[in-house]
Image (cartoon, rainbow, N blue to C red; front, side, top):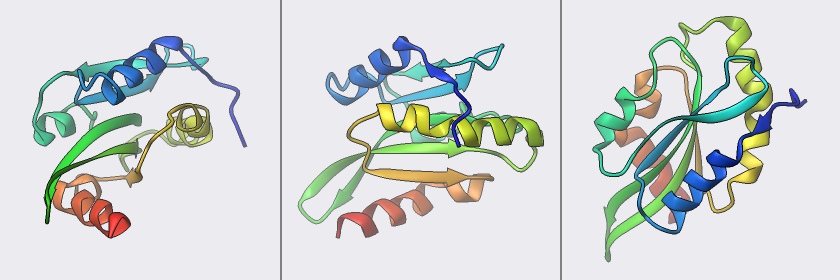
Length: 138
């Protein structure tokens, strides 16, 4: 079921910049104040994975895309990972709204390699995501 939430054009522009221009390392998306649109919450050009995790609020859901870089056999690899962040501490209503709105954004982001669901920091920890990303590519 979809919530009827729209994806603001700046979300797709930022995603293209990350995907094609490699200008961004991550983008965090949120619902607008009136819950009618998905908008860019924050983005960063060069940051560590820890900085990315710090951009995910501890008690509010978000969506995010991270250009996940890792070493494997032949050298460095990159995978675009979509994150559905819905922390246990978030309000039930917010979690439901984000869950029902996710597909609107997810479908518009072409080229995502992995999808990560996170309800606490252990589920989005680097090693956990690395395990998921490398399992999918082997």
